[in-house]
Image 1 (cartoon, helix red, strand yellow):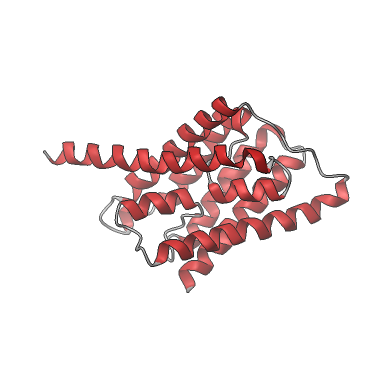
Image 2: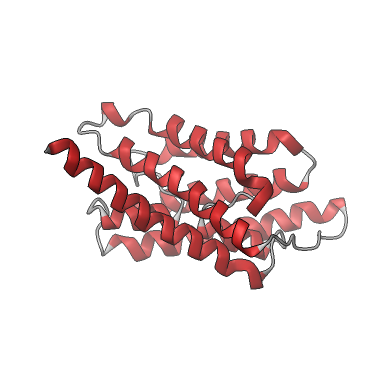
Length: 210
């Protein structure tokens, strides 16, 4: 149970920070805050749940055999529930600043590609860091994931909104940062990225062994 609680808490604060900084005028500093939230929450949960906070990351680790089939659905439920609750809280807090913004629209193909490549980079980093044999060798996981998320958000956020996470996509739809009709782009892009990153990682690992 503690693994699912850790995933809930980490995802909750990641989504809460993302929605708030996207709406409060932080501008160019927003990706820095989002990456910092990811790194900070990863430090708290790394040794408990692995600090996924992302169904696409959980899927990649399931495909790698590093997350059990039993745990996978509970991780995803915890992440999605946390995203919805964080988005609702953020919307309530932001209501004091005026009416909710209109959902932002993004061109489908560029947004889909941006989400795919951003999620691919993030998941590929996770797979490589978690491939280390000892807990000590994985100690830089929070910093690596936080920097990766910050970097792809700076690079691709203007194209797709910088989601790279199905749970975050749901949270952003709940808080009206994107339209429900566009949700498919974010789900498809990130889940395809999980499969692709896992395949590339496994192929390179086989080549290294040979």
